[in-house]
Amino acid sequence: MNEISTFSALHENIKTVLEKPSLFAEKITRFSAGGLGACAYSDDITVGELARSWQHKEYHIKCPHCGAEAYITQWAGKVGSGGYWEIKAYCPRCGKEYRYDMYAAGNACRAHWTALRKILQEERESIRIETARLNKRDGDQSLFPFDKYKVWVQRDDSPHGLANMHVCHLQDGWEIKIFIQNVELWQVVNYGNRSKDDGFVDVVMMVKDWFRSPTTMPGRVGTNQEAAQYEWEACNDD
Image 1 (spheres, helix red, strand yellow):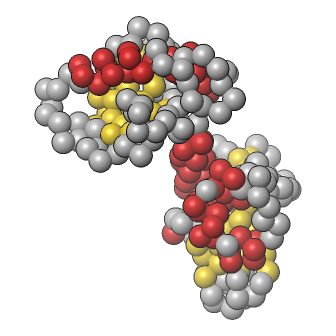
Image 2 (cartoon, one colour):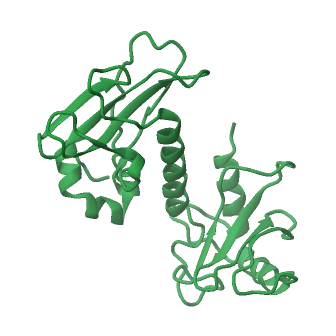
Image 3 (cartoon, helix red, strand yellow):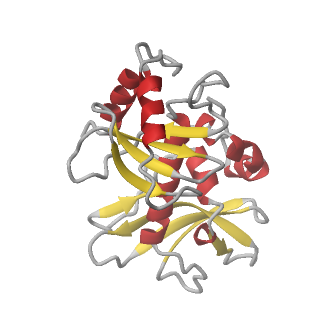
């Protein structure tokens, strides 16, 4: 794990962090928003997640002190009404992190905590998927080489709760979901350059063959099918 200990260091090294955000997993300590009651916080946000969030305009504000562009570092908001919120933001020009809320005099911030949370959740899941790709060590001899395919599992979004995984062709643009246990097509997410009546029979057969091969995932043993099942259960342990 790499270390970025200040927001100024993060700002200066943003390109390095964005190349491998999963390597920058230090947690940023949340701040206490006194008197908010039931709150949503940017808790446990990592340096890598924050760097990715900074790529969204919602995480940019005008510094109320110097007028330069500042970057939101932490936030909190009242759950329910979606009302009161407060944030911290780092201004590179001032070299300081400021804290203020929606009622502060002259507050130039118009970001809402619900938008900030949505972005954070999406970036967090994106980084997790990149880290947990089932074929991340697969080379040219694999049926799903890393540079051509993306194979991963994520938190279950199905009504049936059955273990499934995603397979995406990076160049052709298609993406499908396949049941892990019986290895059948469940859903087509994107057809890419394939026809809308395509049943992806060839890809399902490839998955069946790939499932029988030993996994290349670091720290995992067994077949690719066993690794996929394990990762799916780890993502859906609640």
